[in-house]
Length: 310
Image (cartoon, rainbow, N blue to C red; front, side, top):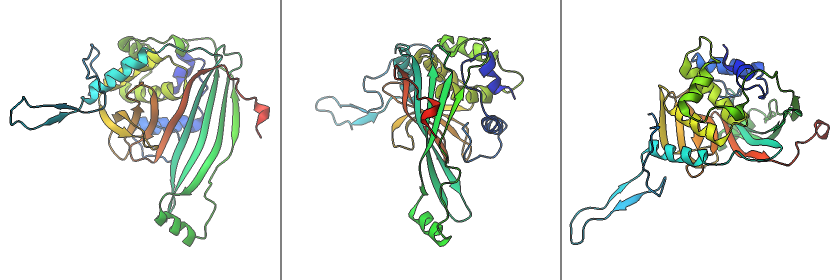
């Protein structure tokens, strides 16, 4: 597997993937059984698309005066909604600031023999623009509780054991690897050129699953530009096995348009805000694991120092 060798060859300033991340990606690409805690796993027309002004809404066609026709309702096609969202994202400026910050919540379901626990962990990543200060990633537990009232009762019947399995706060400070390759902020902004650039780092892996796994990493964990992200949406929408779906909710109830890959129980979704094109979440289709994005972009607020955390 060479999917995360892209970090060395194409994205030198991205933090190196840990063994758990690589193992999880390998399991996804090979179609292995789903895991609960590790990080994750139709075609959009590339020509201009005419889209109704009310994206994601409904428009009503009125019958002619005096007519007996029935009112009809229609919603924009999912492909058109995604294309419009990508256009809006691509039009955003790259942003300014000394640090790129991504704040998200990792939601994971841990199943025992008799009950299911929902764990939420805050995950904040800081990336230095000049790369001299490297990266800092802070993780801290938010909550751990039985998923449903039935799970809560089963947990009590089991003696109310500790629900926070592996809930630990921590801060990792990383150093960018090597000068070789192209920074993510310089990746192409045209879909075909971007796809070709990414595939140059691929070895013998199947291009579809490999591109999906790498794209998740680019969207969640790197300071790629809005235009590159928009192009990436279009690349993913054109992959075999990927479909575009409208009116998809993330675990926080936010509604967007989704790129969906595969079928349950190993289905993966990238959910996108329809108005801005910004990333909302990356999640498993059955909700067993999700990364819910709260904030992402450049800022002049300094990253916290490692000494500030225990």
